[in-house]
Length: 156
Image 1 (cartoon, rainbow, N blue to C red):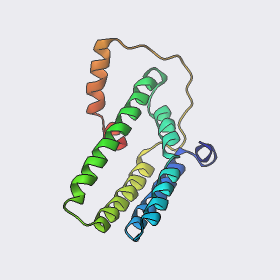
Image 2 (image 1 turned 120 degrees about the vertical axis):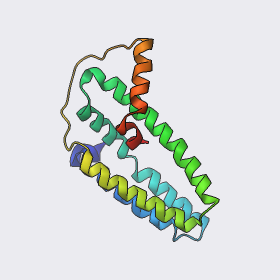
Image 3 (image 1 turned 45 degrees about the vertical axis):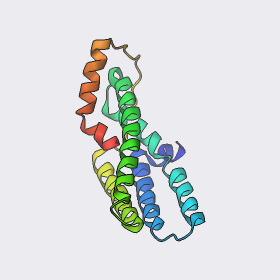
């Protein structure tokens, strides 16, 4: 979280996604399992600032009374994105060469950096109020709303 505190959520997000994009492109240049493992470690390590950025974005997007829904959205979309990316990667690996996939992944990371840098709030307002418990009916309504939400699919 210290990069977010020092540089702001938007700059940290864009910088992290640019680095991840460059590392994804570097995958295609690797010819050894040690090189792939080293880059995989760097991608995981250097993409960790994205999660505190998402928390700051939720704080900026939603009023306090809806923050719990926002964090639920974040958790749900990140898990959905993980599943979809693995299914997509595995399916595309059957059709394309490894190098083509890694260049495509680099392009997606750069696209996410540009999109995130242009749509996310720069310095979200800090809000402090108690949360609200939801009934089962409200949870179903929220789930429907989340699945139709642009932010959910952007996070995924």
